[in-house]
Image (tube, rainbow, N blue to C red; front, side):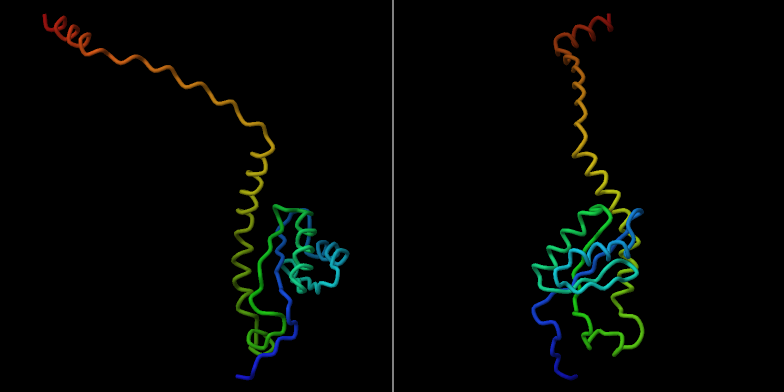
Length: 153
């Protein structure tokens, strides 16, 4: 195999998944372009792929997640864009990682539901804790013995 020479030295790539009833990947891409500060953004069917210096990517992710935090998810990409070891142009067909994305996107709605429940719990006033029921006093052994003797006679 030929020696690998990265094109984007010192950069990171992250996937941004959008599973929102109010925000499409295209709308998120437009908002991301406005706040990109030199980050390479690619719109995909599931959201965005962003590449750039780690600090710039993290700032952009923070900005775009604020639009719909319970419906926007971020994941690191293992190989940089165009990497010949994983690029579909060299391997033919879809990248194997996209099959994993398909599976992950299907479970995002459950994660969203959990996040929304947690958010509601944090904003709502806690319910009053009901008073513990009063315990009945235990039967004294002498009283028990008296009852037994009374019953036998």
